Length: 602
Image 1 (cartoon, rainbow, N blue to C red):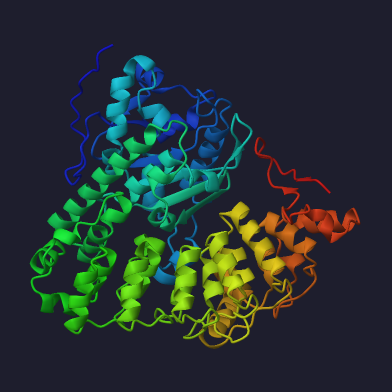
Image 2: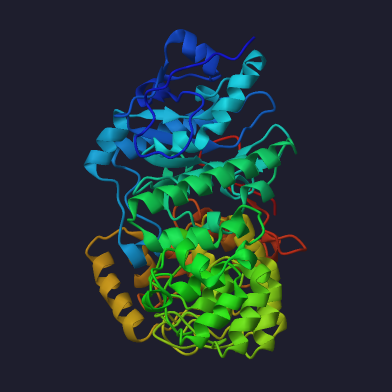
């Protein structure tokens, strides 16, 4: 069948993305009434359930992994979770707060009544519903795929539908596997490169688990480096990413509202688009023009991703040398850009964030006397943001202190790396270079060990978090080390203890109110059941109280509490909760059943 040509009048005026195929959507009310098995686009089109998008629509972009080979949700289990989570979001039962990083830096982000009302009356874009699926419509399907960046621009919210469910192959599909899939990453990238002023991301991990999250992982995981069922899709995704980046940059240049973000994206275009940097043919005048600086002197004055930062991001070593010769300051910190995981960082931080591909730039900056122990405004150390083992080793060779602690936070490189849930190769390299596995809590500040930082920040990445925790435990991390906050963080602890006493149920308040808890206390508090299993097997004390008198047993939610009861009732040894590789034998919610049962293999 020949491809049908459509006229789509719904394209947003501010979108710079091409839309060769119209955007379809299904109303939230229709989705809430659907039964399994979910019908595909052509059937929904015939029944009138899918409609052409209109500019005034409030659309939720739903990204998910397919659970079957020929149908994304053969048994309707994703649909069930989506329906229950949507109901919770609309009623206000869910989406009550942001993740801890967002709350610390930009404040709380609960869903407003207007957002809940818009969601109730809104529409959903989901590939199975809105992209042609019939083999005879292959040409239109490809046009729709090319239009995904434009569809994203028309959406008001991005939802990652990631409950732990079994794929037809027997593998578990969850948030961690979603972050590895090339197509899911492409949708995430398009969302973060959208032309919208604000496009919140919600992770739906279960019928009662939906939260606003920061999509910082998108900066480090390229879609075309993800996993694909069809290898041919890799180049298709790379082309889509390049086009999306170019459109985002063009939009920012035209609107002139976020010059720092525009310069950052220009600087890193060659990293992300898998292209060669073009600075070798660029004169000083071309460099200044490309990044929007009227003159060299003006570029030196800019702190918000200034000229030196742009040279660092674009691998332009000759320009780095010219700027330093012109008295560019190596210690200047840029303003935070939260959506690209940039805090108040120096030019050397920006190079380290890029990983080993920027080693030549790092070498030049260090030759020019950049400080390998520089920090951000909170005292978070440069070494702790390393993305790979090669960067860690390189910085230590250039006199970065593997146990450096400073500023108000006094977090060590290992503590920061753990909080960022870095790769096992980074954690291993820090330990190999004699990072003190129990050092972060010894000198005050935040007062938490690397193990606690990892436990709290890996609640959404539980499988990877447990593997890293086992690595720290093997390195003799103290599983019973209590927190010792001082200064600002001690004040936060006391303030939030009062808030909890007055009825606050915020996870952010609970985190600080129980700051004196140890690793097991935080695992129990966060409902991190596999981590609780690992820590109990490592002889963590379930009855060790914090300064509020609360033990891990008392901090545990109803479901995690079953682990403590199981160990007591069955009179098993703690080691019985893990296998020979220290992996938990605890199976969280059965991947095919959303009931209250838990299974134990002891």
